Length: 185
Image 1 (cartoon, rainbow, N blue to C red):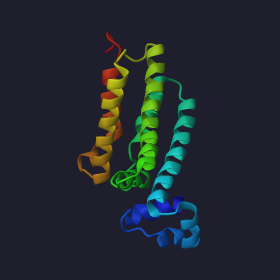
Image 2 (cartoon, helix red, strand yellow):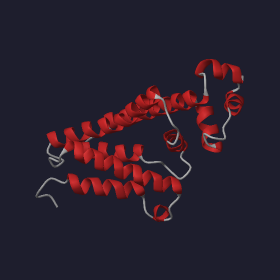
Image 3 (spheres, helix red, strand yellow):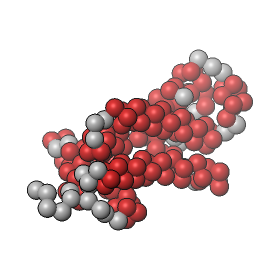
Image 4 (cartoon, rainbow, N blue to C red):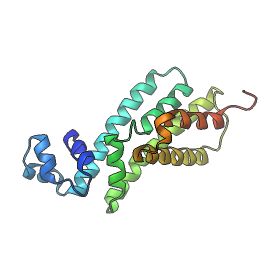
């Protein structure tokens, strides 16, 4: 899976060949085809594997966080690409650009929904301890994820504004501003 992510990030989904991935993984192309059948399925499986790994790492960090505010900061950090060439996010953008059958569409929806569910858990916890305002959860989650996705695209594109200002700081500040309970400065 790591070999596939690396090859895809380097060459892109259109240019990467199963033989490129097989060579990096030290396997035969036939072995890769036996397990995945076709390149589209391999890309989806690699993305699912990558997201499971990221989700596990996020949850471990969130479990150690002392407050919902810290969990929100972790959420933003784990959601946004780390830099312009972030392999995980490059895989996302390239897989989303492909056409998918119903099974692939369901898998992508499940992966995207997981990020919304993580945010909802954090927001509910923050409201329960009166650290966050009582916002309309579904609407806030949609806007927040849309903002983070847009920022992610800008970071991946290499917009110069994010070379001098942190996209993470910008996003977290915007979310915290809306979540600030009434009467708190």
